[in-house]
Image (cartoon, rainbow, N blue to C red):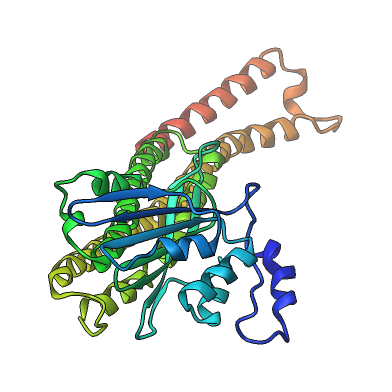
Length: 354
């Protein structure tokens, strides 16, 4: 959040709907891709501007306009003017720190989702905001940067016999949401494998690195929960059938999507509970190891206490000590020390302290 602070300061006092990008700008410029299809035809284009994209929307079939990069506010503003998108919606699109939500503007639906995938370099989770504007025969998707999880959806559109070619824009919006939610399962499956390996390490030889790994996984689960939990409200909005843009044929799929979201949430909660238990196990293991060390040191100190007592007595420099002039005094004291140490060890064994 620290890197977004200055951007938020720029928004203070501005009129509602002022377009100020909040987030990390990608190095490349924004890019528009367009797919127009129906049951029999398919076209894929790359409009150079918002006006050209508007001309490609003929009202026949379904048109999917995808925008990669929301940091160029001029392009976002141009799309808003071309398609009649409310300024507040545009402001939410360029603010990539939005909470997932769904809003009904009568003429169109506005949906904000969080897409998650593993980073290519270090495997850390990367969260990206995806905004959808869904109108009759039209879906406009806005992403923070190039590269997404939607290629399977594009391949389904390219398949002439696919169900998606026979459905409307509401089904396309569902397909995009379903792809995002399904990828949460992929991420959680990978996290589950990592947690299992971490659990084995925890039981065999826990280290400080193990604790840091547990904290890292817990932090990821918090971010995942924060991203998926509000998406339940989005699916619920669509599944109630109240927005007229969602057809009855799509409602069944949307309700199935809602079930998937609940399943993801349950998996996240289970993983969080497991990680909390693992942290308790780690702390208990460290405490037990410390207790074992202290036990050994205590036993050693206890054994040497009477020996030190004897050594202290015979180390005193009194002139008339009876055993000082005795020939067998030294061996006898050593023998006495050995008997005392052996007796204490036998006593500890019988008490099962060793």
